Length: 349
Image 1 (cartoon, rainbow, N blue to C red):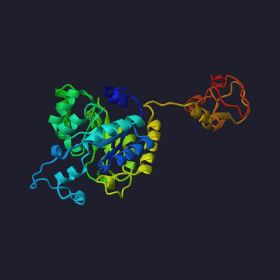
Image 2: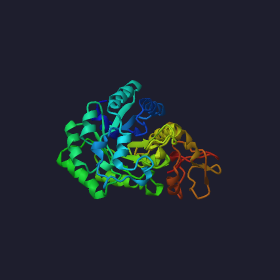
Image 3: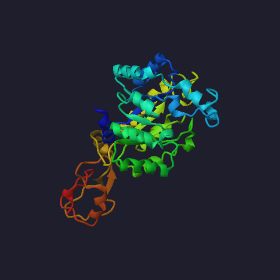
Image 4: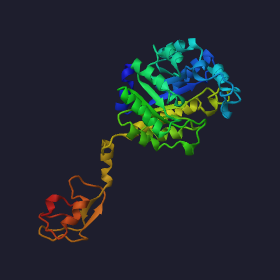
């Protein structure tokens, strides 16, 4: 499958595209990054994703402005030093790509500016844009020129800003992108997930793939998103929540990732089509429905009255259906019928 066709395939088939988000949980250790890939592969993810930012392209050095969120203060006292501490070493990118290729899992990485884009554009099959970059139209313009599929998270965006994203791509006549519902809080409270907005995004972007990037502490929200129509699910995972990696405290571990993917695969099978299908196994159970059986022997010419027939199991194929039975009342029998025989159209004038 070419990178150009990935989103189109996701849109057309019933299989959810599952991204195991390693984020910065590699701790700049290549063996640890390989282990994260192994976990994602073993769990059954379609892709494993890293983040290829450089501190210089993502944060100012001006100490007056580069304050860090209190949840991450234990990792660093300012934003620039935080990103410097956890940026993915440049030579890791191609090594991780090659390892993913060997393991037969798709390598993805988020880009945050021209540096990380130039570093990864030759082998990154889908360009992921994090929620904090969703207003970085200068970067969007560079992505469009690559003609690769794009996945955009919208965790910090208002609806007006989301519509501006659509307008920007419309003006550029570029449609090969997916939009992810998301809540950019770490961890995200369940009552702030607002999954119903997935329906809204499907209306705003009727021709695009809609997905969900999950930052809650459990897997239930991702499962609900799939049931509501999300075609891509992205979930942070780690080796251990206790390993002091910057994304670990809101990530799931190997066992949970396996359970998430197993459940998603079950849900996608059960979603089915927007038409009623009576499968063979269900047809066999139609015997549990009812037919009308004669309470006595009745002769041809008798007038059918209430009480002469009783609705009982099993249903007999080609017998008078429940909705037709009342239409038979006060009509003549045109053939004899024996006690305990089902009433059929051949009996009714």
